[in-house]
Amino acid sequence: MEEKFLAMWSRFVEWFFAFLPNMISALLILVVGFYIARIFSRYVFKLIVKLTKDETLGGFLCNVVFVALLILIIITALTNLGVQTTSIIAVLGTAGLAIGLS
Image (cartoon, rainbow, N blue to C red):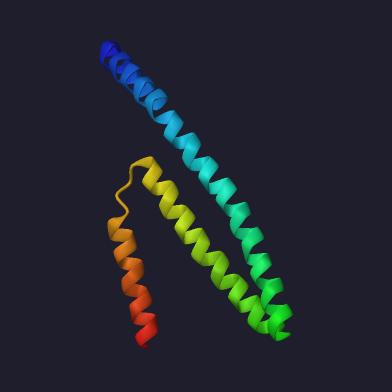
């Protein structure tokens, strides 16, 4: 019993250290991407307010840009971890089409 546990533990440790660089890079993509999305959405807000003088439209477009960038960042991080993201992208495309047609 103890031999099986030790064998499983050693396989887990090998897998963990082999997968660790992917996890670190995915986490780095998420953190840096979040900050870039926040900065870019603030820039969009300032640009829209400057051009149209409408803060409501600026706030709305700021949120739309932020959420769209976060979705792209999350999909990129998942791809880096080895997750197949084609079905996620297909569902997002179908949802966008349904919202656009309604």
